[in-house]
Image 1 (cartoon, helix red, strand yellow):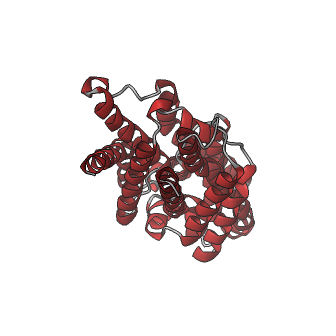
Image 2: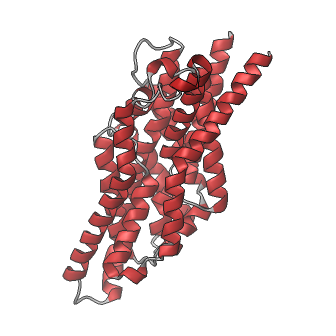
Amino acid sequence: MNATLLLVILICALAFCFDFLNGFHDAANSVATVVSTRVLTPMQAVAWAAFFNFAAAFSFGTGVAKTVGHGMIKDQFVTPSVLLAALLGAILWDLATWWVGLPTSSSHAIVGGLAGSAIAKAQFSHGLARSFEPIEAGGWFATLAFIFIAPLIGMILSGAVMAIVYRIFQHKTPRETDKLFRRLQLFSAAALSWAHGTNDAQKTMGVITGLLVSVKYLPEFKVPIWVILYAHLAMGLGTLSGGWRIVHTVGQRLTKLKPRTGFCAEGGAAVSILFATFLKLPVSTTHATAGAIAGVGWAQRAKAVRWGVASNILWAWVLTIPFAAMLAWGCEHSLHLFAGAQ
């Protein structure tokens, strides 16, 4: 077994660890609402979410994977060391934010990691003056725009649906509406988990396929079936493990949820994520879900949203890309120094 193959196996294993952590970290997005409304127990909720994470494997193609692996940084900078450092930076950021219970974006952690490690690579190869040469501006413009667009879509849709639900069921008792929406929330939770799986698993697919192309194991950027299946399996297993610290923040601290508000929030978030996936853009499930939950809270009354918690979440969103980039930059420097010492 040659050194290249060993390195590929190591990076693939690390990529699937990131995918597992993505599912674990983002389990909150899929199950927070359905758990906080007590429609499902925590274990039932994560099993439900994990199933639909995996079921999403072949639903929306691999356009997001191509954007991540082929459209964020220039191909000549997609090397094994860059991808390894990017994964390490993203994993470190995810673990740190999970520990403090902040629902940050694994999607933006990996794209931030790619940027940071590629910048470090360019500095080694071409000097500080050409640090930003690896960046593909087109891919970044849309991705950065959806940091704001995705939660806004989720907020508007969930708020609008909430207003319609209030109008339709205004003469029904809370007990009657809760009975109906407890059933409906099973479908909305499934839709959100399906949307989560089809967008988020593709980030790992993009990294692994980019790796296989860079070492000439693939002639072109086309995601192999085994990569699709393993990525969804790893994400499903991660979701099944559950990230309970973040579930508490999203599902209980941001605003108080009931079955009808949970249904509206999940539906709004799912549509927002699927829209981005249709556009082949890596989007944050966390952003869309938190925006949708804030939307249903706002539709009831502005004070229903705990804006202090929301501001903490917003700061975590803003910091994810630069901090993941810095961590990956440091990892790439460390790898470079280690290689130079050998």
